[in-house]
Length: 180
Figure: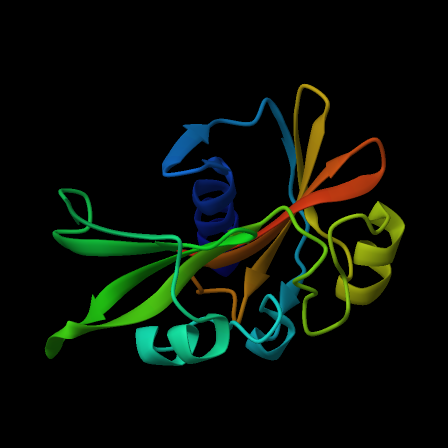
């Protein structure tokens, strides 16, 4: 039963790959997938000093004023989502349940080598380096892009850390929690 839940959760999370294009995030289903059972610790997830669950105030104290800030109501989430766009990283936040004016990080994405992960992986590194430091990934492909995905925290987690690979090199790093 746990393997079915894991496979379903991971497939659901990683069946959409998010591509940041300035203020637009497009969802695209991958074409080929295989399942692995690697789960990584939350301590291995982050970009630079940005981590999941961090408050908006913490993000702003680290990165400064964003190029743009956009807050929109999401029907699927049933609440506002705030996106802070910086020149090399996009960060999305949602409000705390009991504090609707305070937001926390649930998604981030970069295509810049300026934001390494806690293990030191950055855009431009090899696919083999990612696997060496993070273990066997969930793998899917779409065209020339290979996605290396890792479930974060536990088998019952609804969060994924994904590395986009083109020509054997990391081109994008992304973290996302499934919001309900």
